[in-house]
Structures are given as C-alpha cells and as structure tokens.
Image (cartoon, rainbow, N blue to C red; front, side, top):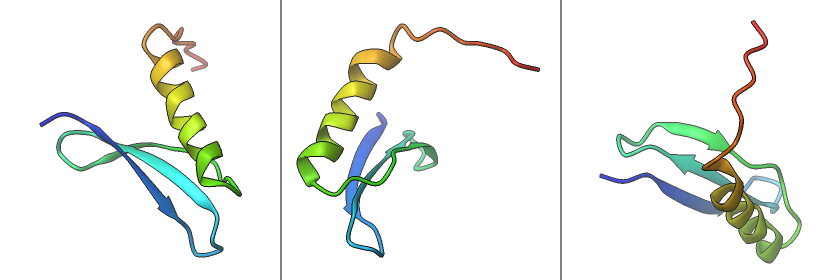
Length: 59
C-alpha cells in the first residue's frame, strides 16, 4: 500500500497535514496553517521538493 497525505483540523481549528507510510506510521508532519489552501500548498511543496532533497547527516 502506498503512502498518503492526510489533511485535518487540529484542536485549535488550524489546518495541518501528515504523511503516513503504507503501514500507517506517521513519517512527517506539517506546521499549523490558518487556511486549508495554505496547508494544501504545504503538501504540494513536500511533493515537489522531497524527491531530490539532500540528506545532511549532522551526527
């Protein structure tokens, strides 16, 4: 099963998103957004930028 983004309202009524792996584990979360459209833009940004993002090992 493929991963999925979930768009939801938090307890304060703000919009957030999370990325879940195929097994249902949350692997990423977005910040709080006042508007649903802004949260969707956050999802779109992750989709656009994550594929070729550099990994920086700070250990």
